[in-house]
Length: 235
Image 1 (tube, rainbow, N blue to C red):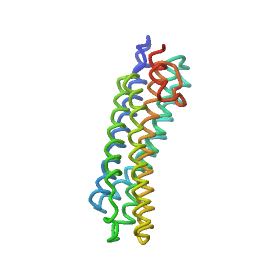
Image 2: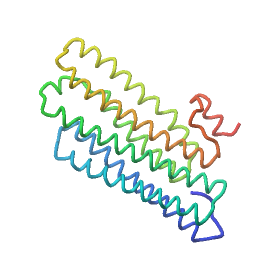
Image 3: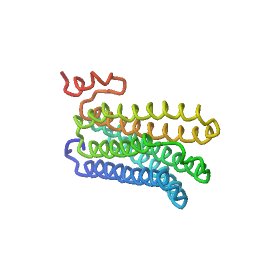
């Protein structure tokens, strides 16, 4: 959170905004967990829960953005306060998009659930990536709650692990499809799922970058990962 202000009501506004963002983050975490369970168990009764949750996320995004605009108009914030409000708006957008990716995973899994060939494709890397993406998102939200820019910077570099898992799955999938062309349709569905998981990691990374921006006043979205530590330390 930004520093304390002379106006206690301004502090209350910012605290409430942070709380609502973290509530949205909690719902997104639940969405990912449900989507992963659909992927692991092919339990189609869970798909509608994912879709309902995604609609709730859309409403939360609109409401929080409205709150941000109202605070800017009423308080005319500057410096770190303004960066915080801009970061909240960017974070809720990324959280809503994570919800979109969870919906995509659930809907694609529903498409392949009834096909006997679906289990012939080894999706070990996708499952591992799902767990990594959920962990990174939790860490990003925790970094936001504590404004831990050092921990946030570590998240940005750790996202590379998810990218590596995606590339490994791609190579294995190509080999599988060449050996058994009849599974191409399902293979493409799994490719979409793998890409959705990769995107979840990307969105978690964007949230972490917002934390660095709030605390340090530095936009690190396009800073090479090997130079990120220097930007965070300010050296």
